[in-house]
Amino acid sequence: MGERPRGQGRFLPHLLTVDPTLHWANPPGGTSGRDSRPSFTSTPGPYTGPVPIVTHLHGGHNTEESDGYAEAWYLPRAKNVPRKFATGGTYYAEFREKFAEAQGLQWQPGTATFQYANRQRASTLWFHDHALGITRLNVYAGPVGFYLLRGGDSDLPSGTLPGPAPAPGDLAGTRYHEIPLAVQDRSFTTDGSLFYPTSRAFFDGYAGPYIPTTDVSPIWNPEFFANTIVVNGRTWPKLDVEPRRYRLRLLNGCNTRLLILKIAASATARPAEAALPLWQIGNDGGFLPTPVRLERLLLANAERADVIVDFTGVPEGTELYLINEGADAPFGRGEPGVDFPVADPATTGQVMKFVVGPLRSKDTSVPPDRLTLPRITPLGSPSVTRRLSLSDVNTRFTPPVPANTTVETALGTVDAAGNPVVLGWADPLTENPRLGATETWELYNFSPDAHPIHIHEVQFQVVDRQPFGGQPVPPESRERGFKDTVLAYSGEITRVKALFDLPGRYVWHCHMLEHEDNEMMRPFQVGGARKKKSG
Image (cartoon, rainbow, N blue to C red; front, side):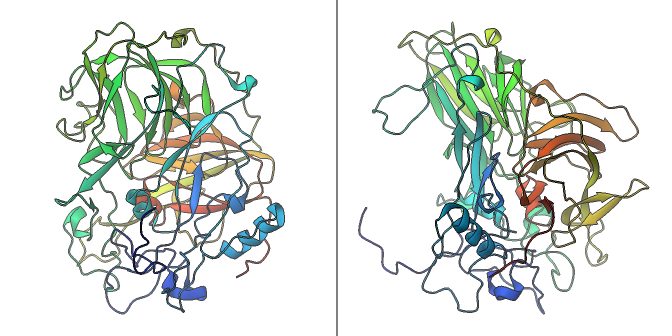
């Protein structure tokens, strides 16, 4: 630790430009106006106050007070927070009291402590911020990490997996054969600082008028595709590998960008043939029923893939590349380079480089095609089927706003005629599973883009997908077992089945963070009515 900086104890404004016109945490609203969409008499400038934050363990199976609920945020305990500001979200005080009662520990001002049960299958989890209406900025600014949960004897493959993985106390020079790789896209200014749009005009050129004259927010962008790829926080890194098997824990941590990953002999050839297969052995919810051999791996936002890459027999000095054949645009469906243009081969099409060196020690791991993975117990029959909708919401102000300008994205229900009922975050709750119930959720995607949908604190099974007016299609092999995030394609019904075994208030949402932050998130309540919120 160095010398303490002057002014310690004063809050720092956000690194990025905060749009205060969304339905968001809204600390300036005070207790009565927090977690709301504020009203303005003229277009406001960006919010420059203290930053709300609350941490969500994505993929965890934990009680509501440890979920990282979007309205359970808190501000830093800074000495210059304006007195009128709310310092915690609508549910912060209630969850603080509940945690103290259950765990005997009182949260201190400006903090929250969570208890993670870790009673679930071995899996690749990750954590990130989840504060209402500002998640896209908090995640983009950096606080993201892996949470790797390992199983006992009943949750292990029959053969040895590549290892070791990084661990506290490792000696310098330790060679790892299990490596977590968080893939994200970021843009930078000429001085090396993070770039993120400061105006809606960056997205579609629309320069106003904005709220309150129209319904267009002045800063929020419906999507954002950055122009570099970073892995574990570094742009286009290199990894020296041995001619042996490696276990890679892959995460798509991008705000909007869907990834299609492949190992190729060239960094820029498109379309590139796979130089080595990716053997997927696990996904969001842990091990798959059987290993799946892939030439190319589709990884939607927030999805994880546990893969084995076998460099055995690759000559020393060989350079191989993890490339991205996803698009520099929202994903629909189809074949890269045929149905949509692939990412820029010179920038966002490159992820990282592998350089094969000498073998340093014997590889005792089992070839992936010979692994027997742990048995998966399927969920029982559902007692309830819910029909839910995914929609874009376009402007009501034409003119002066161009027609079909997206002002928010939304979830909702489906009416008896098969039409979407668009609902916002603050609309009455419509999803209220009975505690212990198994339900099927049918996701009707009425929007033009695919959306990765995440349901908090459950692991679900993908049942099937069905084009509107077509026949159901089974899930892909990589989607077998359990998941917490599923890609819902445009013009299709995506069905998932989940057991709701934790009482409390949680959320489901699109994991394109720009969508999540502007109404594409809804609460759900498991196990009946709540007590009155306090604080």
